[in-house]
Length: 570
Image (cartoon, rainbow, N blue to C red):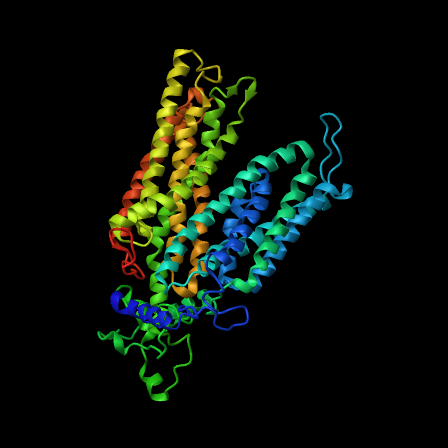
């Protein structure tokens, strides 16, 4: 059935090859007209999108590094994607809100009446309610703005490549890699340059520069408008899902016919978005098929216009696809819970190690930049070396399938916790040998021994984090790409929550009965290695669950192999 359903894309591709003028995926320009393939999209359009993402992330992390905004904006993403889709109009609105929030934060740190009075010695006057109000108003505008635009960008960028063209499909795979590369370039600059500016020049300039970069990001994005390819809007994906659930509930007493051709389907040969793939009917979750049963009353009246009573098979299958993705989605939460240790437990571990280089002390928190550097290092290698080599063995356009790629990353993340545990065992061994158990002092073990665990997490991101972005774009229903991308990003926030929950639970159970616990204030008396082994074990079981889920997962579509074993086009 998947092979038959995929014939639609192949037929489009052949027709596209015949005329060679327009794209075969139904994309249009800003005016709603079919786009010229040679003059739009592709890397020429994505250069503006990648530039926007780099500047926007630099602006965001320039503030979030010090104010911890990450959780709030990831939590807002699915909410806003339910409402706005990925049209350029809402993107402009939320970008403007984002920029206003940045400017508000800058004003709250520069205008005397909006910021607290200067400290006198060790006495610092508290901020007034109005000053608090302006400050938090700016923060919430930033959270609202970034939550509104973040999931749109990756989907919109991927839309610049024609899915009916084998060569452009390969470039689309590269886009996801370089998109993540742009994010980390912005993060690296902000975590180094912006922290230094805020420390030396004050908060006013420290907030003003990110606001300036946000303005540059908006200008860069809209400069590419004539080159962009747009997908026709398909309405709210949440509304479409709710219609299926309501209609299936209303017809819960009807029996699903054995012949799926008897279910309601329009005569159109495409999905909700013109030119895109139409999912084949599946036999799982048959209770939802009741939404597409034509009742006797509807057949007699000939009225099939109420979507809250009767849905198309395509609409039903879109919801099924969305539900099938959830087990894969859930395993990403554990991955990001492991990743969250970089900014928490890894830093605590580094504080009790030798941080000196000559007369300079390395801030333990700065070691997180190794993760970013690792990503920046591995993206070009993955895209230019690993993928072509893997392609020779698999024949796949992108070397690995999305599920294979994510699984490799989950395994590597488990290795990062193993490396951290082994390092902590060595550190605690030195603590005992030097009699530092009660001293809470650092041991003569260089902090650079933490590099492997940071590097492994960065390497895992190349596989799992990027693979997840690609998975939720490729496997989601065509009308739900931005929403599914938002849910993918939500795993980062839920991973942070899970990490906090694990630490709280471990602390509670290991300190019962007056015990010191695994994570006491003096880590020389604790067993941080046990925590790392726990996370490694959790990662192992998460990998097992993922493997089972991936083996059972029914892909939305499996593109035909476009490359032979030598890496050439078939």
